[in-house]
Image 1 (cartoon, one colour):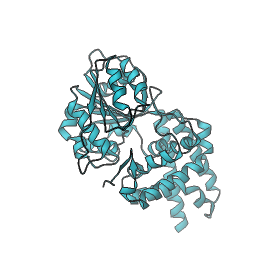
Image 2: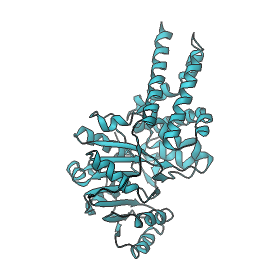
Image 3: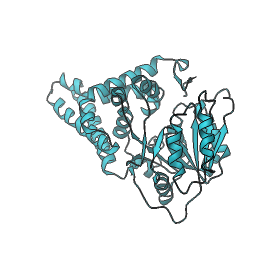
Image 4: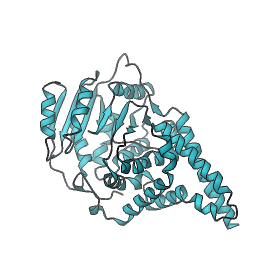
Length: 367
């Protein structure tokens, strides 16, 4: 009887995960190129930058070629490289670009949250587009994002960029983001329900109505949240505002991390929020996502492990196709992906906040 209950739970979860991945593949979950709107709100592009001298030139070049941008604000967040000099050079070619010097980090704030807060305070556009310095948008990406927001009467739209992976370490770790997102969350429900738990966002690319941002005092309210993007989407839905989360259809790309160690450090600070926000949800979901196959092998019905294996492959293929990743890579790295998930959960459970650093700053663990 116990085995029957266990098998029912395990297979039920796997079926839901596979169905979720297929819904995201065939649903309206991708940002697509579109013609500019006849009338469009003014847009302030906001870029927090800390030691980004190598990534900023490419982003600023693309933005300079993009029409419909009201202003481009870059905040130099106490960089120790030539970030400020790079921005000053681009200011000469595009008057929309403006350099802001970051203020000292107050107690109780995380660095990026404070940088985004300062940028929003200086912005004059009707829409605020927060963009990470390592993002590579097509010239039409901003138009497509704004059309998604305006046409669907939304208050915030966030996009998960296509992830560029160069080293083997990146290829073995970065797919964990899309795997968790697209196997646990049916993205159409982010837009079409009021349930705040059905929310997701990616701080690499977020556009939000300035009026809503100011009303909720978003970065100020979430000043100490490590995964402030997810917390922002949940808070907005709790407050009755409409949110959407999409994956890029080639319009936006990004190389998040440059190798194994950097990827592990980056995902360690976010994995708990990605898996529900608590220790309990992180462990339970990881068990369900990664141990179904071996548990079915030792069950009284080991042949069910074959069905689970097929479901895993379908899930991985659907997610890789929707996110523009290699299907072959997604299939043969399944065991490694599950191992990485356990490693990230273990790291976030055993490390104190001061041991987790990002951009040379210690992070505190938000609630």
